[in-house]
Image 1 (cartoon, one colour):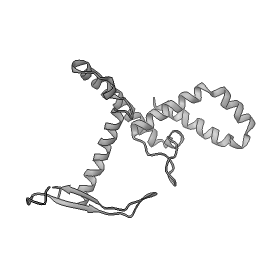
Image 2: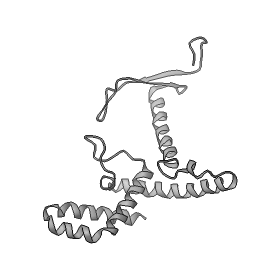
Image 3: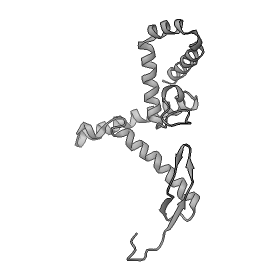
Length: 169
């Protein structure tokens, strides 16, 4: 869109909400759209955020596809393998979110948030790491629990979450 030449066939959707959770927003969203309504434009934009998460998961935030430097058939084979692994991780991460265990595996980064914003893929990876650490350091954790009986309730909740995560795999 340019100021010098008129354009037709689209609308500018605008949405301004003062707060998004703990974030203060100084500017409005301006979305160029041909969908005809603000709710439709905002819904389409929300779907775009899911796609952005997927791209981040395939790049440095996850599989680091760009870092492989593969080309040709090897790249295609890697993408096929990643697609299968990514699909599995998404299904398992969705199940983890459904069972509400991400608060144990995704540490809070923002004030007033129960858990960190993570993609479904990231929740799955964090859950797997968390369960592996629990297995690796189980003896040490047991010894610490004997010293701090007041934390035993939280320990049991965490172990229940670990059991739920393992049941998904």
